[in-house]
Length: 266
Image 1 (tube, rainbow, N blue to C red):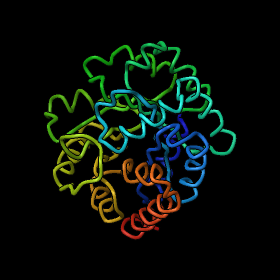
Image 2 (tube, rainbow, N blue to C red):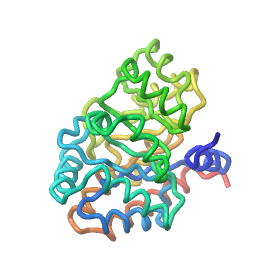
Image 3 (cartoon, rainbow, N blue to C red):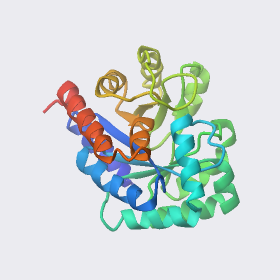
């Protein structure tokens, strides 16, 4: 069964366009800003919203998203409130939603219950960066039964053997981590992850999305050479946390325009 996510990415591929995934931390700086940001990000050109589920020890995230998670948690963010945010988004948008969170929260809630509840609320998949492929078998089984995507990861350090194991059977998209480290805007040589993406193509047709470090239209264009989509997080979250809402949306529009100018086939 095709999900909202599958349909969106298929449409982007058919149109010769690159996808933009925008990460927004649920509840940072507050719930109303989160909802408004989702609505306006879609208008600005976002294809997918990656909804960050705040956790006290977000090991894959850099200082900007760490601070946003702390802000959301101090503001009372909970799993139940995250569910309600997803439900509210579905009252005004059909944009694909991919959650991004950590195993501790999901296992405490009960992973199967988590998947069923968030799918029912309107989410299309999840990213769990602290569970490696070798330990995700039960999670993958539950997600497959619910037609709920569980993103796989590849990095510059992924060996060909592990890449094959990770990519074969992957659904939704494969998260291509551009560099060794955590999230955050930085200057990246995207040719390194480009070689990894090229290798991954021999194992899968699942969309590839490059993330980590993308903070400008120019960086988005450079990263998109190698993949189907780019993931933008800290550059947007940082502006939202500083009260620079309009600047955050302007950045998304600028990235959308740059990607379409560089790659759109129509």
